[in-house]
Length: 202
Image 1 (tube, rainbow, N blue to C red):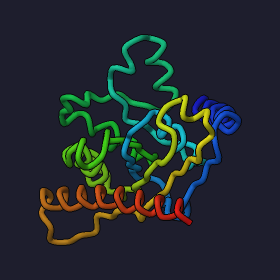
Image 2: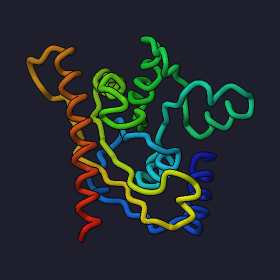
Image 3: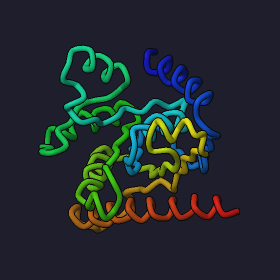
């Protein structure tokens, strides 16, 4: 209930402060459970992805430093976030998201940066969670302001969803499957960004 209230309240505020918000390909969002992944270049992106996917709620994987104080721990957990050590993730890091998926929920994982800056291993964590949870991956790309100052300039904001990536490949070893689907996620990010760029030129 707190998540819904917070999302709706922030959405109203950002609608007043920010620019026009467009969701592209919303029909591609599958039924829960699934893992939604997006290149994480700004905190603003997380907010708008939450707006774009409603009425579904996202359970966010967040760095453990955001849970250090009592208040932040309470706030993050009520916003459906759960902590993970992103510098040294162990096998236990995927247990909670897999349990959430088995409960029919949506898990959001946001690897930082792009193909060049992040490296494929960051995307592989999301792929591993989806594979173990037996759910598809929904790729998404955010295009818009990166800072609060840019947000106030009321530039257009876009979230574009891609085709869900499924794990129905047969006779493929797990290691090769993880590699293949990680590459598919990276390719989806690049395709979605190019598609957004194409719509800007029209």
